[in-house]
Length: 336
Image 1: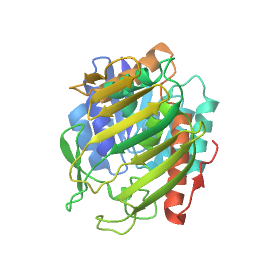
Image 2: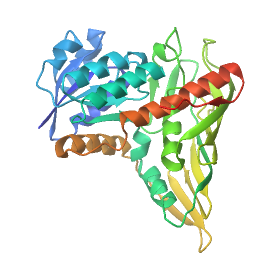
Image 3: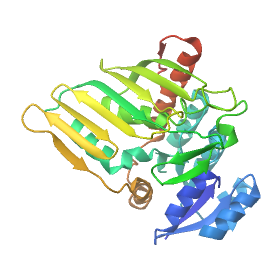
């Protein structure tokens, strides 16, 4: 039995806990949230002892801890989990600054025997896994151009529709209000930066365009696009706007000798030697696949697919995109 603790019982902590509860070899042992009522509400659904502090939670006999707090708080909790000798699952984005992200990576490097993984579920989406498989063919050649366009809509009631789970949820205030607000160009789009780097390699520079269009608070860009140049010479584009009432995913990469695209769960691939291949994925169990992968790494002493360093590389692109949007110029991505 794998004993798990949850730090952060809001939107993502609840999602993770509900998924973990379905695994017969997992027991949610302890939960902590700064607002105790949220931890109590989640404990009533998934079990576990509600703790008064994260230090109390870490004193429990736990194999792994999930950290799903607001992004700017990750550094304190993630370092504490690793220092306590627990395996770590860290919600994306790993931090809201490269300094904090580097501290988390350093904490993981001090404890190489521990498994630490960042929650980028798109890497476990069957359609994207198939894309990666096709794009990695020896005869594909190098990447030339890539794109990730995944649209959302934030309605006037400040709820957003999640097409992956077919439900509406509230956007936490910290996401777009106050000094720690980073918005979708930083946190949400880090899914896409990570995805395109998985397919095409590291990003050299970015140029971002965007503005605040529909958000009630004039704080962060809700409509934007980020042009990218990769270190291997390829170019790319990321757009994850929150102003589009029609939601869809269109992610693809054109390589020297083939092109592969994920169009809302239908993978289409074409090379020079035959007809276009189409593979449809009706069900997306990426959340289950992601958690199962992490827990199997814990049980079997394997390295997770998404490392803390991968998470740091993603927010290095986030930092550059946010700065480019503000300064209206090309910004080179900091080496990490």
